[in-house]
Image 1 (cartoon, rainbow, N blue to C red):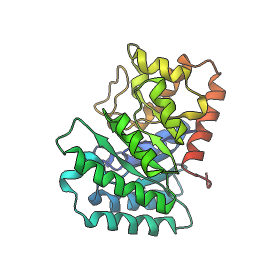
Image 2: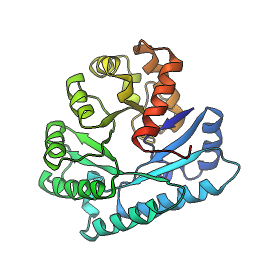
Image 3: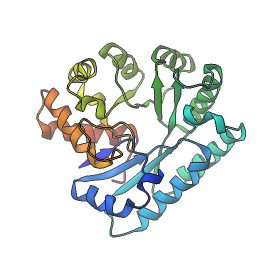
Image 4: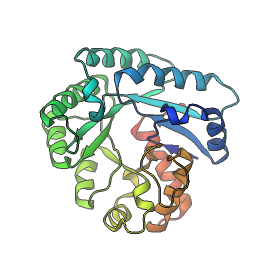
Length: 268
């Protein structure tokens, strides 16, 4: 069984095919998806999507979610979004089915126009909420690895999470692992010329890895579809097995346990 630890299943490109795709995912033994939130206007639709699909008995899939303010969406950010975020998270965490498993996607991105001071302010506020609610975070880190590490250490954030779309060195990976984070490994390792990342991933403790597609983004090598799909998780898994020493069975079982563990998924 596989878990796509990062899939934007609520995005418009999936809406017409959600039911068919869930059935195809079930057939492929990809039974669980974690949907990260990116901005306030999408939080209600994510919660609604997870609730509706959970109620359908014909689907074996289990959907989970996180809520957060992604740095790419800070142009629409308003200060009251933070109080809304905490209120929604508190309400979701009180539900018996425990579908809310993280705060995120949050982080810092040096390649966007929003200034880093604004990004850091919102990032730190969300880290404080996650700490208060004892939730792991899903990190978006672009050209800001050292600064994110510094902020995590300064705030003494203690609930870990996932460094989404990891593509760095083994040294950087180990710094995040020390702070309780897993590395989200996606389509980049399917590219034969991604030597730095493939080498790092081949050397990391298997206990530190989770798999993700970031669908509809982060395409896999020689992708034929117009957008990435959670079905491509198997392509990523196959590439991971090619660069690891362990057997595919061991890799699959350990990554499954890693993902359940970091997100405290207990009703699977």
